[in-house]
Image (cartoon, rainbow, N blue to C red; front, side, top):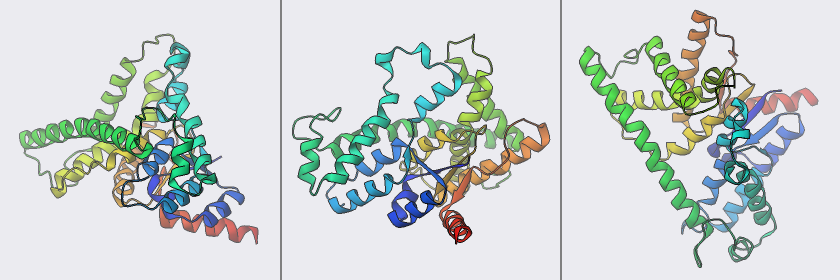
Length: 304
């Protein structure tokens, strides 16, 4: 069954009514814990009303919350049993997120949320839960910059050495693009000390392709346009970790940059599959908001 993974931008943009209609008409809507953290980061930020945060949590509650991508990937490649139970932090996030959504659904004020989240992980006395999440997201943004900027510098140097125009969309061939993807998949696989598990590299390729592709295409866009790195793309990059090429999961986004980056990666992937006959799906794995709304309208029409 196709799963529609709504990213933070689109779940905030669609009404509860529309989301419930989609769900009740058989569309399986899923949401990453990362999206809930991004929404919670606006709690008591001095700009966002409590009522709006509460509305976002109601919208999130229309979706099935899935495991954190770190947990999903480790389950997919079969290494979870090698991790001590007390170290399985990523597997706790879905439970915590459900608790947060439930607290917001019953609360009528920010003070009530504070009272219910006194034991929020990492929260110091007097600190807002939103403060804790904002600090955590800031650390992740810095880590994201530490990954993307070296790739940007490497591409820039490589294009200069090869005499290629970085403004040319064809500056990086499909073969070179996939060389980068496959090297990164092998690097990740090399960190999994599980020689008895077959097909680890292939499963990591399937699970990490969207994230790696998003990073490469984001870097190429920066080179083409001369734009600066937007650290808010960090959340999008993390959510891309949920896309598994071996499954039927489609990321739905209202963010143009995310959609364009993944669309480019998807086009390259289709050409790659056609050329090399790789045995994995060739269906789309990214959809924009308007396409999703048209899908909902079609599902509603079919039931009338």
